[in-house]
Image (cartoon, rainbow, N blue to C red):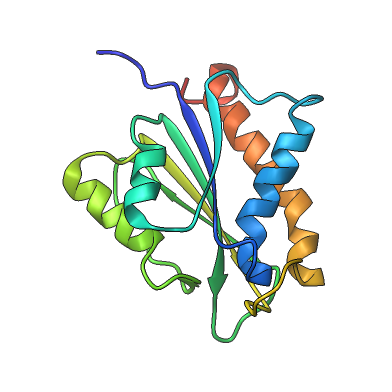
Length: 168
């Protein structure tokens, strides 16, 4: 039995729909920081529009997949982050929904049926304030980017470091 060591970090959304671009913003920041704070070897950074087939393709074979996506909640608190995880079980349905018609929930269900879920899936869903056409995040969502970057870096480090309870 071989160990799955690849880490997939996926920013989901549309960078031209304001807060829906939060996943892309987090990935951009991770790429900027990679020169000073490299992620573990085998880490793949990717953006995705949320299409279930593309999501599955990006996380297939991963030991850890971390997904950052915008979410809608009613009532909502823009910038609030929800952390959800799936570990060889069922993903709890959050009190939020993706900002896409089909997306993460459908990808998880389909990947489960096909047997291609990552070993461990962590989702950061960020409540948005504005999904109108345009670029740039609202102030509340922009304020969540740096803490999300640190959280994703921490997820990757824990996954690769058995001394801290990681899964490597």
